[in-house]
Length: 176
Image (cartoon, rainbow, N blue to C red; front, top):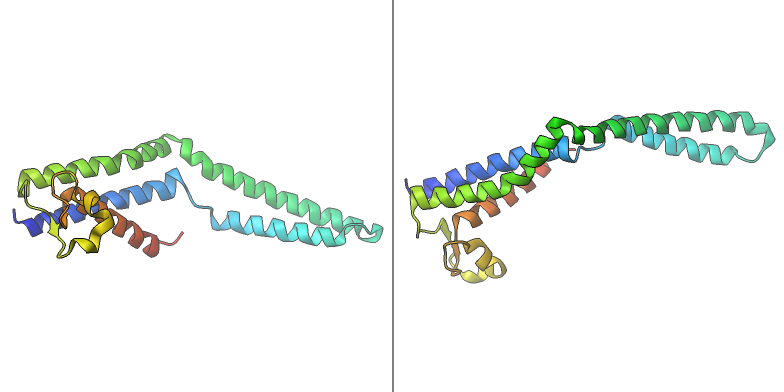
């Protein structure tokens, strides 16, 4: 296998790993607040503010009590939705997704290292940067575990860089 083919294989694996981690985190490990939950929370805040303006006068007590009950109803419904959302973390699927997200990154790094050393070349770097100063603070890190820190990027470093890039792209592409 040619080095540039291995470069794309490692990048593709990094994309798949990041996609699986993204889905596991977004929907099971740290699920986002739903639109309905946000709407109910904002409605409850608005009703509490309205009730505060009606407070104090005996003439507006009935309206104050009615608005207060509506706000309490909205808060209870928002709490139910929040508990339902947080309950997904403790389901078997949520626990499995959490474990997958936790172990997937180290396993992908091990895969990248063994794939590169077995199928491409043990001593050939994935990429070589023309000047070490371009990657100066990270030169040692991206060269680990089997490359000298002279601008060489190892398979593990390449996997790490690809995952960070794909994470940023997924965050931009997929809305909450």
